[in-house]
Amino acid sequence: MNLRILTCAAAFAALVPAGVAAADIEAGKKKVQEVCAACHGIDGGQPTTPEYPKLSGQYPDYLAKALRDYKSGARKNAIMAGMAAGLSDKDIENVSAYFYTQPSVLASKY
Ligand code: HEC
Image 1 (cartoon, rainbow, N blue to C red):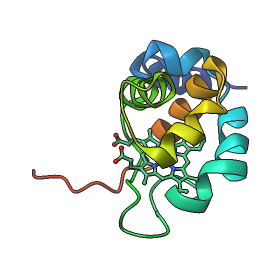
Image 2: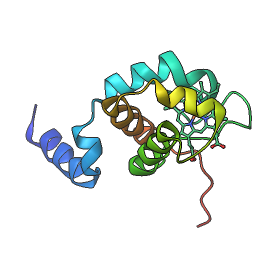
Image 3: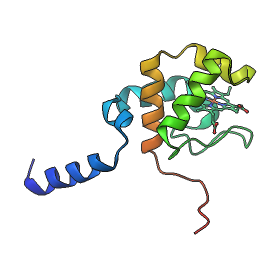
Image 4: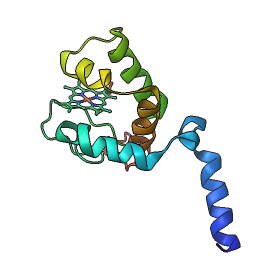
């Protein structure tokens, strides 16, 4: 690895939220492919129907909180309660980090 790549990697790491740096993004990708892609799309940006929210590019702490809330019942949705029930805390961290690293498809006002 040359110095320029190292410098870029360091600069990029500085922008990444702490939870993402600790997460296993590859494991998150695998989990998404196995379970979540059927509705949210493979990168979270191409949901299979408009009723399913877009997740790519979303803040990882927002996604993780949503998943923890589905799991605890603080946020109620029959579909996602079932999905979140099967996720460990580490899975939640990993899938949230994976979605965050995918290109956002949300509209930008400016
Ligand atoms: C059968 C379809 C389906 C599957 C599979 C599915 N979801 Fe969802 N997901 C939904 C629906 C529908 C909602 C909206 C629920 C609501 O209104 O709260 C949602 C909402 C979410 C939200 C909240 C988004 C927001 O903006 O608040 C997150 C995060 C999420 N899903 C993550 C996941 C993850 C991670 C997986 C895989 C482990 C997964 N979903 C699998 C249908 C699905």
